[in-house]
Length: 256
Image (cartoon, rainbow, N blue to C red; front, side, top):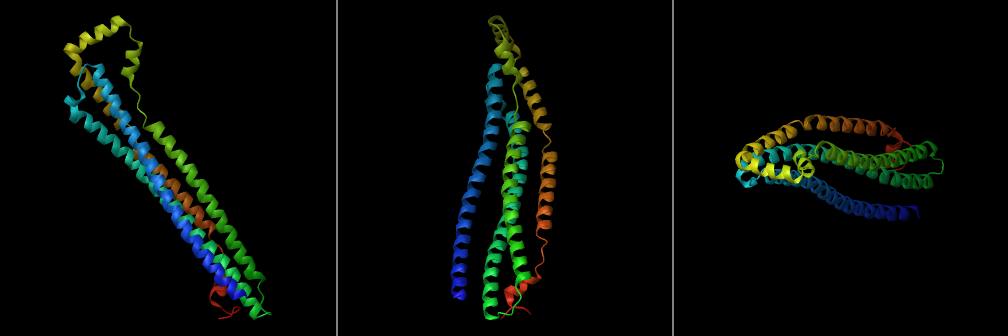
């Protein structure tokens, strides 16, 4: 009877594993799409700001394609550095979660095997082994929960980092809104003679702002956070496998 239960349990575990794999793929697709969309929106926002700045100076942005492209390309590179590191965080968290789920399924099957062995050998002392299996199951549950909490925390940190470090505000647009009609007329007249020079100076300012975004420091912070997280998970996994191995392959207390 117990062996039949074991087969049914194994089948159920495999079905759960297949479903978890499908869900993980869907989550990964959503994660990638949402993160890239956030980055694309930041790039588009900066591009539009530079376009409005050109209009403010009475210039056509296309005439300054190389200068604008340099700023946008550099901005994108820094954004993608941070995104790539966030993706590495995501992969590490998912790997730890997946391993914990596999170990938890093994613990459930081990528990059933232990019952099978105890039925075949009534004199078998199983209390210590049961304690080890229960301990493994609980630790795996803790790790899975810790991974879910950690990813959500990292996602919020990533969004905050992108909004705090990569949001560029136009000073010129604020000045335009504060100008009265006479100041606007004077500004348009000035642009007729000096608009190109003014726009190039504005582009230099934006280039400086982008250069000052320390993406290397942001990436370093994220890497250190990942290392600490993985170290914590490794510490949580330090349970005694000897008893579990005896259940799995028979051993001196089990039956082969």
